[in-house]
Amino acid sequence: MVISPINEAPDGAEARSATRDGPDCDLTVTQDLPTRNSTGDARPPSHVLVTGGAGYIGSHMALALLEREPSTRVTVVDNLLRGHRGAIDALVKVGGARLRFEQIDLLDTARLTAALVADPPDAVLHFAALTSVPESVEKPLDYFRTNLGGGLSLLEAMRAAGVSRLVFSSTAATYGEPAPESMPITESTPQRPINPYGLAKLQFEDVLRAQCAAPRQPKPLAAVALRYFNVAGADALCRVGEDHRPETHLVPIALEVALGKRPHLTIFGDDYPTRDGTCIRDYVHVSDLVDAHLAALGALEPGAFRAWNIGIGRGHSVREVVESVRRVTGHAIPTVMGTRRAGDPAALFADPSAIARDLGWTARFTTLDAMVESAWRWMQANPQGYR
Ligand SMILES: NC(=O)c1ccc[n+]([C@@H]2O[C@H](COP(=O)([O-])OP(=O)(O)OC[C@H]3O[C@@H](n4cnc5c(N)ncnc54)[C@H](O)[C@@H]3O)[C@@H](O)[C@H]2O)c1
Image (tube, rainbow, N blue to C red; front, side, top):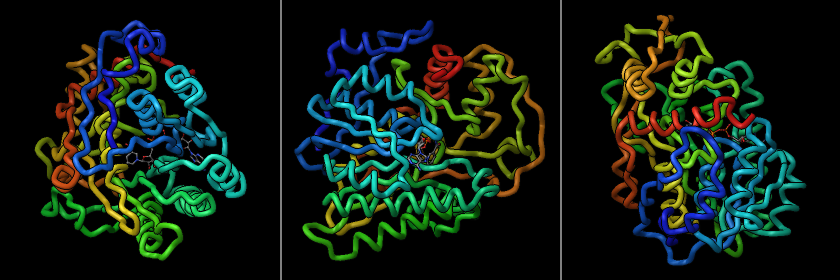
């Protein structure tokens, strides 16, 4: 699949008219060229289904598809439980009639099937999920129902509609707490999740693996699982961004302190065996993640299940994130020391060399400051998020 560079299309006037107004959105910014897929087929997808496209990552994905490939249609399926009507509005501004929104719960197999049969997509990018680890510990049934059951329902609808290509948002949480000597994490690091969120994601990977191996007419399933580490940043033109409620991710929480929406940031433990005592995580920019999906779409093979890690291959500690937010925003960012949280491994970072070797994908945003700047622009332009 060949996807046009984002700054070739649409034309500047259309890009500007599509931009959310905001004091700190730089209208002259053009996003980095996407990584081109060296192994994909030559046909652009004519119709892609994005589940969870009203959420953080799914909306960036839908935006990229609409913007980079002028003939591609995108259908977003989202129940708006955690997603935003404002994200859909932003996508419609860019894609016009090429963007169709279906407010459907993935668990409603009958409606989902009817939508897919009526207008079958060439491929499905499956982002819809519940995504909070602590919430998954409190409400495991909800997480298995949505993240496993929702996936099963989607596969049934795809089978009924004759759709056989799927890219799935998996997670580093499927690896659990690998020993420090197992860093960086490769795709063959044992997957031993330690919470219902990671477990349900791993179980759906297993379903995909089995389903790809099963005979099916006219074609067996082709599936890729991308195991993301920590995602940060926003669209360069601030049309879509991160707005989780409640927010549980470190970068937006630190930026909310900068905005004055929170008095301080709590650091959960400074006695870990790391360089400054705080936990280390691998942050990847959402635009790089989108590029990885475009590469994965081109690498889908009937009957094959593949999985790749998506990270930059380096970790940043909580203190380093706070320092970056101080540098970028110019605000003090008071911190309060808390105790360790159960199930927080000291360090988690990816070995992303497999996807670099197989698909030619590497992250373009490699510094924390660049990711924080991008998230800060969105937040300044949209201090209340999509509200
Ligand atoms: N954000 C990260 O750092 C991160 C890291 C690893 C993996 N992931 C995975 O990436 C995907 C997207 O994450 P995100 O941060 O954009 O989350 P998000 O909460 O912003 O988006 C998820 C979307 O799915 C929708 N949804 C939830 N349940 C649904 C259902 N039953 N039917 C239809 N729609 C439903 C929500 O309304 C929301 O719009 C998830 O699968 C998540 O597990 C995210």
